[in-house]
Image (cartoon, rainbow, N blue to C red; front, side):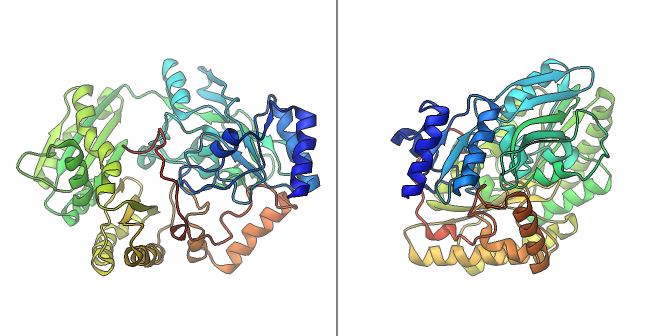
Amino acid sequence: MAARSSATRLLQRRLGSAVVRTDPESLYAASFDSLKLPFQPEAVIFPRTKADVGRVLTLANACGMPVTIRGRGTSLTGSAAPRHGGWVIDLLAFHRVKIDAMAGIAEVEAGATIAEIQAKAEAKGWFYPPDPSSKQYCTIGGNVACNAGGMHGGKYGVTRDFVLALKGFLPTGEWVEWGTPTRKFAAGFNLRDLWIGSEGMLGIVTDATLRLIPQPAVRWTLLASYRTEADAIRAVERLLRRRVRPAIFEFLDRYSVQCAESATGETVFAGQPGRPVLLLELAGSAAEVREEKAILLQWAQDTALAYRAAKTRAEAERLWAVRRKCSGAMFAMGDSKLNEDVVLPMRSYQKFIKFIDRLRRSSRLAIPCFGHVGDGNIHVNIMYQGGDRVQRAAAEKAVAELMTGVVAMGGAISGEHGIGLAKSPFLRVQHSPAQIKAMLAVKRALDPKGILNPGKMFEVFPVWKHKRLKISLPWDHK
């Protein structure tokens, strides 16, 4: 601790106490992310220039100081929390967004929010599709770090599909540029994609060049209800076989719908409380939407118990209420939640629905599920009472069974949240020893001192055994 204090004082002398802060308020604010598990850092650094970031890393390597990168702190896995203390670098001051309207490219800095990028792109007639639910707050740096997705993933893809180039620092403090602001690049190893999804462990992103697509001319929304989850999934499979790819294609099981109905005091469809639903949005040219709209209306008539289409954007917003309200309302089922963002191959949807039913019965816990059936990314919410020892044990057992079952079905333990601390116990369920060894070799090659975001991903951390902060963050689902 004395060595860390000495290194922090040296950094303050080099950069100034306004840049390197050690006051209690700054340390507390940087001690946790949306996982709400706090770890006290030695200092929080608010760099004035990007060169300051390199200076911090150079000194950190010299003295073996852990460094964690932070944007807004919306990570649900603990990937932005300083697990081993040290220094936290806050990049929110770097938030420039520049749109090249001719090329359809956005040049952005790491602290720019997704909402800012989308708004400035839309003003020039362009569209940036990745849209996490926290997009009003989360930053592109964090989105690159965890390869964030969102509801548009099924049709358009995730963050990785829109990154053309990255700039930033290696863990050693050396400046690097991966790629160029062009749509083609085949000059050397593709280390750009190695950084995407590396959760701030292989380098620090300060700038990104993003590919944009033309802004859709028309949007159209449909909500449909079904007798059972199995019926809803059969309807999904029937539509996908028609090669229709909605811009958004959401599934909510009956338990998620019940939560939303409880929160709003209204049933989604009159006389049909607690029915699973599918929520779809088409987006594209007028001709494209017109053609697919006819297909969807016939599909809904053939498969759904009831359906409702929005005639205006205001009506569409009302249809979206069921999706927006369900997550926060789940805490009526338990004061603690293990929120897992698993991914399934489409061929395994029906098998997964049966698996979750068995898991509910065996665990005796509420497990509402919702998510993006356009790309197989399902959010499984294991609800329990944190003060109940029996329920805590049941939740721990249930999440382990969930991860093992998903991988056995050919799926992945995370689709957009990443590993961080929360999913570290299950990394070896997903990956073989040889795969883990290869990842660790890359880590050692780029970060020989092991200073960047240590204690994550590869070190097992059972989050359910640790007490979380009882606080409300602006992006929490209300």
